[in-house]
Length: 442
Ligand code: PHE
Image 1 (cartoon, helix red, strand yellow):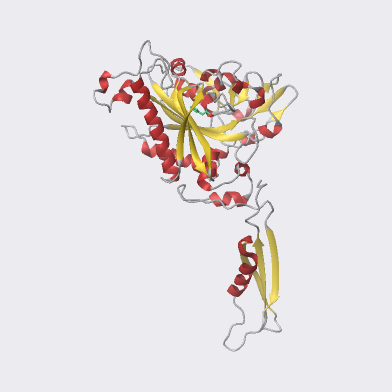
Image 2 (tube, protein in one colour):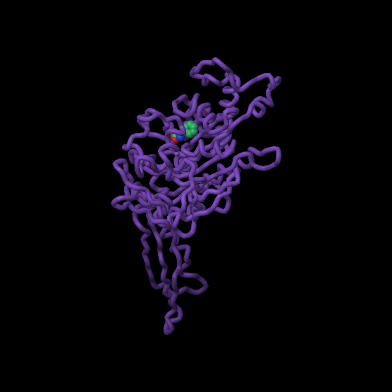
């Protein structure tokens, strides 16, 4: 998280030894040392588990947490926990997550032929304060820990404020290249690009001495670490400048290739230096959207102390965290972040494409529900050899009056009077709604 604005962070519920009394969803997990722990298996539809704020405890995703003076989650926020928009097939956040996965799977392959990066998208958003802050070297009293900026269940548990909260646990589990997507929660201003719940994709890649320098001439003579070095704006004290420069280059190259894959060459991007307690040096990428520069991701070279305490002290790594909503807004021209929470069929159906790479340009919805107008009229009799009416005449008339506002016109019935077979009633049902109404999409 940056010091200046809101925080970013969270933990490892994948291996959390929690027994879940509901629906026999507690499972035994075999650990490498042969012992077993009970862990929670989440059904993909966690929304089935109701969140409740009781007098003494808060129940989230089937687990109960005691309340204390730090508890500040609200029913409105808890109602969004478990919605997992990023896992709902064809939701725009799912589409963009799948596109990012597909890119990483095909662009980065191990010598064995398997994808280099593994992907996690179902880690529990309830994390410990330790995961969200301490594991990322965010000191006690740091402004990003403020109650006013986060959703706490109590003094030790919270809704993750960023997917970085899981970095340490996943590195500890032995991974050295992974992506992780999830919902994150921050008390924030509400406008078209901020919402208290949004989604991030985290990426981490670690390099051994050999992996980093194998492509460099005489690389065997180079080393990741140095003793007695100094922390400068370019690097951490224990890193060699050559190692950091290669890691930084790989990070920026990976992200530039990702953004070019998603948006093509034309999107304008720019890098700026910034600060996160868990990376140094740190950078931010901004993209030009509707005439303004919009921040879409933070990244940097991982703090060595974090890797040391996660058991990967012989490696150097980079990490990034990108905002899925921000990217989806640019990619699909979605003008307002609240639209992602829409339950309106007119929103979803625009994203139901066969191929995840198919371009989509979102057509704004009206704040009004669809309006059905029915009309029926008698047709004049046909003259010799000449049709008095064709359906297209009517469509043309509707188009010239209703323009863009009319979505569809369909014939629902026709009728021929039994006693006057030559005249025919045509009953046309007309469904229309405005495509121009701004605001209040949900
Ligand atoms: N967690 C940071 C945020 O939410 C982003 C980030 C991730 C920065 C990884 C650096 C490395 O803003």
